[in-house]
Length: 129
Picture 1: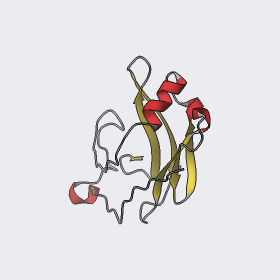
Picture 2: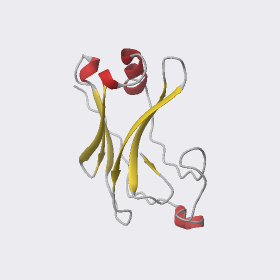
Picture 3: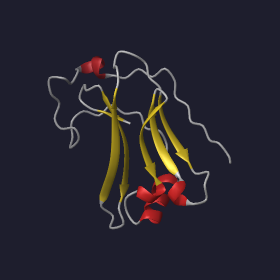
Picture 4: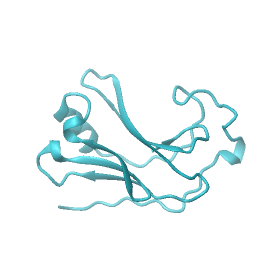
């Protein structure tokens, strides 16, 4: 999930290397109220042995706003999906300012402690099928 320069749009993103080692990404977005707490979720469904039916869903407050399935991942489909959905990863909570995405700070970028994030709780769950 990525939030940029004071906007009220959440971006669920997957970053990976394509079959040639180049950066590849895909994302979906959903607007939200920045003044409230929200529940962000990433659901990885590997319950089907057929990788083309496996999925990663991004949710905001229980509403799915972006889904990537095994057969529409970038790269050579099966290998790309293996890199995305079958590799270990961890949550990263980060406040980054500037850079290539979204660009230099602007008048919407809050200074100092105002640019922080408040997290009520963080959980990681694993289900066995």
